[in-house]
Length: 480
Ligand code: GLU
Image (cartoon, rainbow, N blue to C red; front, side, top):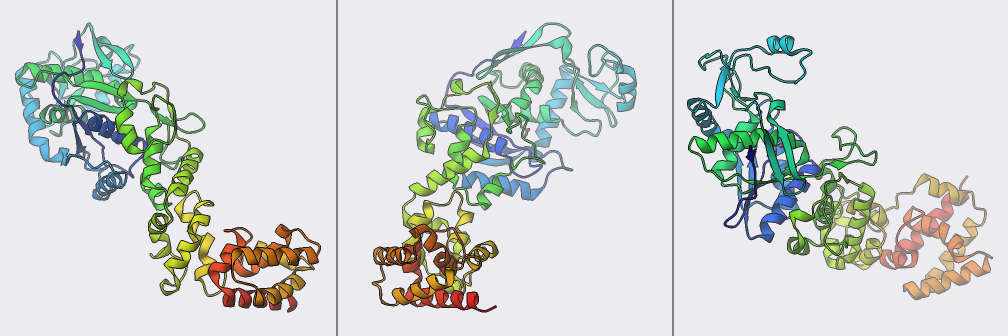
């Protein structure tokens, strides 16, 4: 029996080993985070290794996406990024050693021939046809690992406990393709060995390949490689609300898309940390530094973790509200001063934004909601929402209210409190509640029915603009 066990000794070395075949997936980000947390807590080293050997599916931009998203989330690697493709020579040398030791055999079966032969077999996978044919390696010949016929390979998993795989159910798997390209499982093990990885922490979808990795590790160790197996920890899958594995097509899984929508990295990373783990006290707001102190692989759950976008969004709102106003203003820059800003750059006034910032913070969950909350302040004319205007147009008292508002706002002291009192009197005299009386005024001034509190908004916009907008709305109402 070949078994894995926790490596003893010095500070741990862990790696995050993504294959750059698409946008950076939230599940991968969670795997990266758990590796990072584990390394930081133990004073170890976090290595980034890009597993880019699948030339057809890799793209350079996906690699950039991984590196930049990791730095956005505050978990930059201590070493790397290394490229697996730079190490193909080592993978080939390892295959040669395996051949010399008799751990692999050459196979010239075509896929079609194998499929025809094994159809209907009780044990799925390759049938060992070339095992004892004694053919030499060469072009057009794959190398297959000679898996022991009996016994079991046991993964001692730090999350899942002991998982035993009967060797009879493991096929003689390919380690080198007939094209001479090393396969994932070989490259992965050779690199983990070369990089001194002590703990392999990765998604549960890779658990079925782990017995193969353990068998390879043993064979390589016997043929001159380092002996100590790494410890393994397989993290629970992320699922959607139908409890199905998150899918690239159905679910919003790209980390980049959350950054672009104005999720704060500290909120996002906090939420990721709760996907399969929770701190001993069970609290949900756990800043990264606290997570580092509390994180233990032993506390990771087996059960699939629900990636709940609603909960994530709610948590983001909490983080937004906790920011000092100046910091909030700075974080909003991509939406207020960059190409995403819906107003001309020269009309934006940071001091005016700062004035309403705390009120906006209370009302948004993501930063991309900010422009619609404050565009009335920085556009020459408010963008009038059609439904909002229709409501005003259908209100026979609106024109009178607007006219009266112009009258009193001309004189009133320009503070939120004075505007509040004046509008209260206006409402009373028209027999309305304040909330209802405010609707035409808000729509005239901001173009919308919802937004930051009206009186503070008016103070920030200034008396001249407010009066002009009220008059314009009044005219619009009276023109047929
Ligand atoms: N490159 C593999 C993948 O992205 C991960 C390998 C590993 O973590 O061992 O699925």
